Each structure stands twice: as C-alpha cells, then as structure tokens.
Amino acid sequence: MSKKSKHLHVIAFDVPYPANYGGVIDIYYKLVALSESGVKVHLHCYQYGRAESAMLKGVCYKVNYYKRKIFRNPIYNTKPYIVASRNSTALIENLIKDDYPILFEGLHSTYYLADERLKDRFKVVRTHNIEHHYYKHLEKVETNRFKRFFFKIESERLKKYERILKHANCIAAISQNDCAYLKRKYGNAVLLPPFHVNTAVNVEPGKGKFILYHGNLSVGENNEAAIYLLKNVLVDKKYPVVIAGNDPSEELKDLVVKMDHVTLHSKITSEEINHLISEAQINILHTNQATGIKLKLLNALFMGRHCIANSKMIENTGLEDLCVQADTISQYKSAIKKYWDNEISNDMIKARVNVLESSFNNTSSIHLLLREIGISKMPLNKKITARQKDIA
Image (spheres, rainbow, N blue to C red):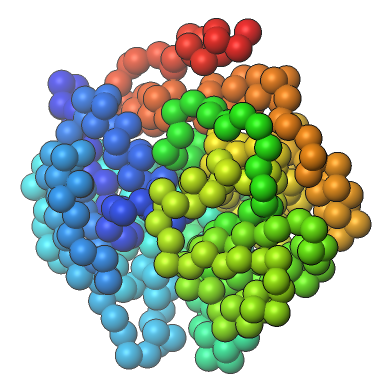
C-alpha cells in the first residue's frame, strides 16, 4: 500500500443502507466516518433482497454489487452457508486490481481472506459476534425443526471455520467479551466499539407515557425476549406498553391482541423507532445471549430516559452503571415501579455523556481503525465535547 494512499476496500455482507438493523447500522455509520476522515472507500456489497442504494454513492468512492448465491440445500457444504453463499469471482478480480487494504465485515464476508492472491495485503476482519455462539443460541430458540437443524449444523461449521481469522492482520471486535475471546485464540484482536447514528446524548425532558421494548422481531432472540417480557414482566395494565419491530411472530401478535395495555408497532422505520425510544418513560431490554453489543442498548442510552436491562445485555460493555440492572421478574417489576414516576436526573445524563460521548464516539473509533490499518497517524480525539462543557 502506498503511504500516500487513503483508499480502503470494504466488503459488506449485505447492502448497508437503509441502516435499519444491527450489522448494517455498524457498517453504514463506519462508512460515513471513513468518508469524513478523507478515506476513499471501495465498497463491495453482497445483495439478496435489498436494492442498490443511491445514498451509498454519496458516502463511498466506488460501490460494487454482487448477487449472493442461494443454495437449494443450505446444509450441503463444507463451509458455513453464510460464507459459501458470499463467493464472487468478480469480487476477487476487483480486489487484486490494486494493493489497498481490505476490511472484511463479519465472518460472513471472509471467503477470500486466505486467498493466496491477497497474501501481501493488509486485511482487517470486523467481527459482529462470535458467530458459532450466536448460531448455537438461534438453534435453542428456534421452533421450526428444519431451521433448528440448520442452525445446529451452521454453528458447528462456523466453529471450525473461525480459524480462518489467523490470516487477518487485525481482528476488530465489537465488544470487550468478544475481544478477549478472539485475542486469546488468535492474538491479533483489538476492541473497536460499534458505530451508530448518535453524535451526542439527547434525552427529552419530562416524563414519557409508556414502556418500550424494541428490536428486529424477525430475529428469534428478540421475538423470544418480547414474549418473555409480556408474559412475565409487563403484565400490570396501569403501565402502557409498546412493542416495536418488524416481522413479529404469530405467537407474539396473538399475545398482544389479548393484552389491552399493549400496542404493537410493526412495519416501522428506524426513524420511527428512534422517536419511540425518545418518547418512552422506560426502555426495557432483555437478552438471553451475551454476544457482541446491542446497538439498541446504545440508542436507548443516547436518546431515551430510564433504561432497564438484564445482566447479559450489559455485562462488560462499559455501560453497566448507566442502566438499571434486572435479572428476575421481581427485579424488573420493582425497577418499573421505582422509575415510572421519576424524571431522569441531570446527574444521570452527565454520567451518560461522560461515558457515551468518549467511549462510543464514531470519530475516535474510526481514528483507532485507521491507525491499525496504517492509513492515518492521527491521534485519538481526547478533547472534551461541547456537550460535556454544556452540562459541567
């Protein structure tokens, strides 16, 4: 790579706009930060159901699209399906036209990571989860027998395939837990916090009028969490509840119909969800899987009032002190009762600003990535933010 060049290939497992679910949110706002840092991004997107995006042309130097392959039998393959289906000769031909560094987004996009033609290139893999852990959990919560069997096989293949990460010069892990695991196994991992839409803590004054649970409900983990909360925690009719997210299951929809104090918002945009986050009195978050870091947690803390979350959602995120932790049904109910009538205090907001606007700052995070790649020698931004001055 030429020392004067500020070009970077980015291989995305999906078209990263609209930025309306966890993985593509991280990719899209990373692209924005790269562009703002003067990097010319050569974006390569695998496409399956999402249209080409004019927005990406305004952020990237060049955008290439490749059709993701669909196999009739997703189980018949030695490689994980999420990797084998993202295999394009056009992609590798485009990559070998120059000597620019390459950022592989997710284990999904690493089909060519160990390719001999890229042996002299600087290669970074951004991990969004420990994928075999993630798929093992999907297996546990899936009710469809075929899908459950697929998740089981996929988890086993991903566990074996993960060794390909030894061919990366750097692994950019999204969470402290993931970073510790990857550093222990491969030795070349760094913590790169998630990229997101927020630039400053912005909490609406006053009190909200409902409790919100939000997430992509097509993901079994999120749908399961919503059902758990409705059946066990959010049962008191004096607290209005909003469940927000796309593609809820029939079980979840049937459950909401039976609960007069609960409203379901599906077919909803990211902007509409963000509005609900800011309007809620309490954002309640629950997960049974402590992998990666949940962007919905960051959004709730940047934009929302009180945030109640279980330990698997917040442990080793650096955000523990900003949330009310609840792990049992009684703890959830007690926290709701305590914070339902309380406005969020200035001290709580100051604490969020101090943590979020420094440790989860897109500008600082992109400088860290660029230093690892060697594109930029720019120091991390340690300056106090304007927002921190305002509330000091």
